Image (tube, rainbow, N blue to C red):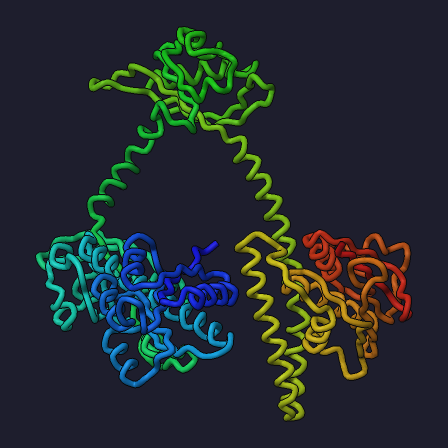
Length: 612
């Protein structure tokens, strides 16, 4: 919970002060009101307690509210101060403003004044906190920029990237003064950025801008003296129109876009990274890595030491392992001893041996490992020891299997969505054809709706494949509204119709539910023809809804098969058998149930979806 707003009310009438405190705290529960009757006591309270706002009368026992305000401003120049007084005059108001009062409010008869006062307090404190926060941010930014090992810049997003401002260690980074870049004498993208990296760097930045994401890139620069350095840059695009407008809706969309970001020298770290890459195998053998099972062996295979991670998998101590032949230790399952001896001999001869194995454990739950035998050489090149390290990949293998299953599900989902594209595509083609034939632009409107639906499906597909979740965040949905939108996009024909029996609401992923209804409607239109009728309503006594049509209905012999991918009741080869499979996938992904049967109100098929 947020900390309360502490208000110090100063008034020489204790009864009025208590009454004001009561009404203020009742008006706004986040206010905590302290009271004092004199300015001197109030100043002592200020020095002892944290106070967010002062409310003071003008006529105090020991001074005036104006003089009290002046005393407060000497020690607390930014503290909100509201003069709440029955002595109202232009002279008092003018003096209060000159002394730095935050707000001025006259006492009135009745309780409405306390609501006004509470609101003035809240506004004054919020403004004060915002100002303090802005100052803190500005101080932190100035401190950060002054200590950055690089530059902070602002540049127009155009070829050459001309700099508008540069702060920081510009000369030490690239050998040019900041004003040389700012005045256009030197262009970052043409004179500093290495010619071989210009095209790729530009592409990286533009792709990030198109995705409305910050960008990061590492590239080379050529300094003023010809030295080549590696730099790392992170930045983002800034819309100048919005930046200069107080109303984002009125922002100038034609205003140029600029980039703001940070560039730092990573030449040393880049060289260090390359060295680490060259010596990756050596660093992987760090003995105390908690993620590795590590053993140090004599070249003849005798165990010299093992790390604690390896001991966790066997019911033995280090002293019981050291001195034993490695192939005889309990890490190895029966039948692997000969392989281990061969790996030891190969490593002792100077080879780098990679292996995969299953290790038995003390709890009878074998683990899958991937490991290596590494020879350790002395300065003369002779092998003096062997380092054996293995990584437990049991969970990774499980994740890989789960990922494969997920990929299979997403592959199936992608096939379903590909099928879902067919209806709006057909609608768009058909309506555009009619528009060309008749010149009636109403057909174009319908085609545009279908194209928008195609774009929604594309976005939904990309989002689902990115997240791996077929059903994302759920919202409260009115089923009838979805039916109406789908019906317009499906364009079933003037004679087709649908009806909704009463309001039906559910919690569902909007995009996934839209696809579910699209497939049901498409199924009804395909089997019911241009006069298809559809009815939707709430299930009696259960959470969920029913969907039924007046089509040919479902043969009891195929009801269990209609949700299988590839199964179709259509006699022609036009049926892909994906629509109802997609319906079932969406239902299951929501954790619902679906049953197919005969319609009750119409003469066709009925689908009951239970969401409880």
